[in-house]
Length: 401
Image (tube, one colour):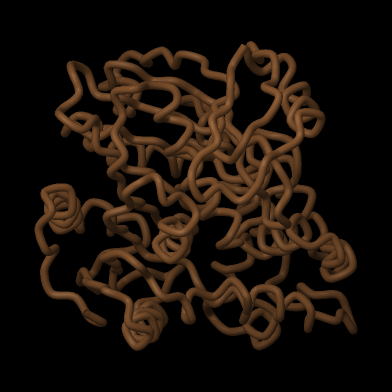
């Protein structure tokens, strides 16, 4: 039987009946242990070895140990939930103090279970994006970091995925660090969060909240690549039209279904027009590539239903904007100037607001880099930033300090 340990600063105990229901929902996915009498966020539930795929440039391909895990976390509404993810541990013996940890927050893959990164394969529906990020994570494992990567709430586990909900994402990003340390005692307590796009947004929320949520851990800093924002402007932006709307259309069903997952009063079906409803079907059954294919057949205008009340949707996403956060740890934001999905002027506004809030932030731009290319062109700066954090050295010039 797996036992649970009460951690300092934990918010509450979780009843065994609730936890047992969650574990039983995983039947057929992994060997589930007998549920503990009490469990808390970060409790490790299942662990299944990940075989290294020949020729793959992935964390599992370079790790001494790689596992797909499920663990306990907390939903956007404060409920106990089961979350999946992966843990990749370097080969060899851990250094004094244990392996340093990078908790990775992935970018947009979709809202369906098939879009969970831990379920990816060479022919998987989200592989086009994950094939770009996997080499980044593999490099970190090779360099001696234990890399943990959450799937987020509702991707690969029961329930909907509250896309771009900062609180939910920060919970899952933090709690997988706790679960990884339960999995392997060689993993230390010092960690950083890093994320791209949707995950960059998650990294900012984690940088603001994790020290409070998990005081037994030592969060040193954060790296946010092209952090997503301005979801509160979705309805107005789509209604105004313009050259950028076509590229944004595939994100509409993901945003609507994500908002519905966080707040069932925000019903996606009632907000979207009949002509655009195939987008919802594509989002429920596929991932971003499949949604883009569906979006190509739908006019970029008239996406919302006539007379749709989008005020509640706008208000909900206004609560997910990172502008008002106060980051508690040094944070590097990396942004490409040629990014068509997360515009550099918007990220500049966000970082200016964070600096004004007193956040210790290092904002760096990369000329000509698009949304995905920023991961590679920022490599040297990001790795140096991470190294300085784990070495206990000031990470360089930051605002708000």
